[in-house]
Length: 210
Image 1 (cartoon, rainbow, N blue to C red):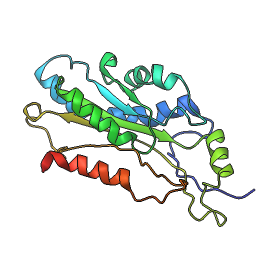
Image 2: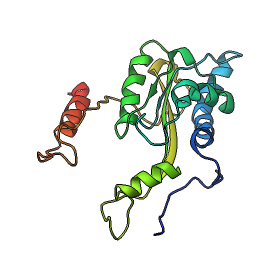
Image 3: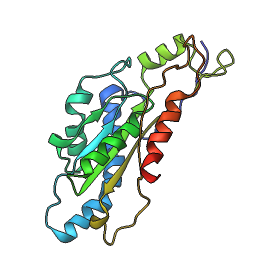
Image 4: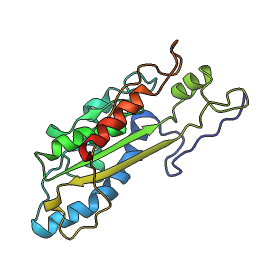
């Protein structure tokens, strides 16, 4: 056996795995991200309206995939964080590396019918089955796998709002375009990878600003 380094969220116990781990990782981050928007809404009305959310998660093919992620995770996060999520308008994006940007693209579409949208993601490699699969595939960084990576975990959320809805709030930036494209010749393909998917995604994202 060889030691493996993992970047962990220190406030989550080692025996909290799977579904419970995702909830613990995401709920506090969601509450902090949504607080400024909810506070501004309470100044205007007594009860903030439910807000749509687009959540990026690991793909269904992952060894630790739990069907409750697609069925119940949004509702559980709403309960634990106190954020009034509009569950009927909130999709899950179970993609891999491009899931975060794909979530932003969907959020921009939702923003056309909503005053604001929460967009975010949660992911964790801290699971015995996932770590075993990565180790078997020589994907954990070590002396024997220099191109491997150090497993980590994170959750992050952003509130997107239309310009006319953010009076008096601090603005961190604006989204001009978002695009996701599949790489036609990924790592391991017989043909050389020329970053065709990345090039197409960049061209599509910057098209909105000419």
